[in-house]
Image (tube, rainbow, N blue to C red; front, top):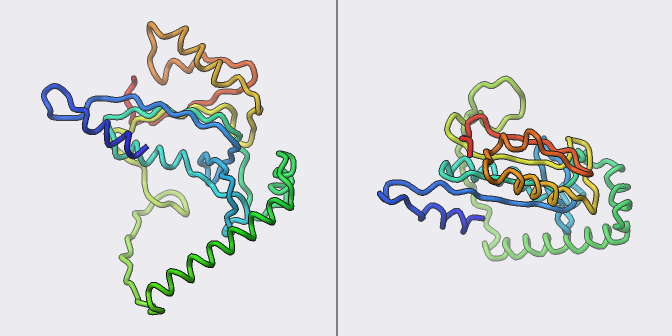
Length: 221
């Protein structure tokens, strides 16, 4: 995505003063969950910190990209489940078995990943000569906000994104869903006069319950 965005930023208007407006379409499909209220995909790799699969923070990456690319409109579709991740919850392990993943595979993947991480740390320590240099970190004080555990406050600049989910939070999407097919058919039917995100107000699906999230600071497309 980084390379494509760099290419978009170099595509200038005729006067050469600013980048042209660009539509950036993304489709994510696979096993998914929600982590801290955001959509993540599950990578086929064990994470020893969470004792679960590695999380691919796709929604977070799109939000960050939109924050720094006001000339790009991000249209992102998530064809994946939105089950809430509960740390060290046995239900998650039962869900893994339900998806055809054996406990033996989970344990084997856990062992090999943990060993690889240990070897990497040992190699880094050897390269540094065993010296533990103290590094002073700059502490940034966050502004007061109406909530706990925040990492920042809402942006007040133009942020263009539209997220389309195939289900509500806590629900799932069928493995052989017609979500993408229904979405494409809907866009074709409205291709002559189509405005995003308003075009999704009337969308219907054979097996999915569409939900749309857009930025209030975004521009209609």
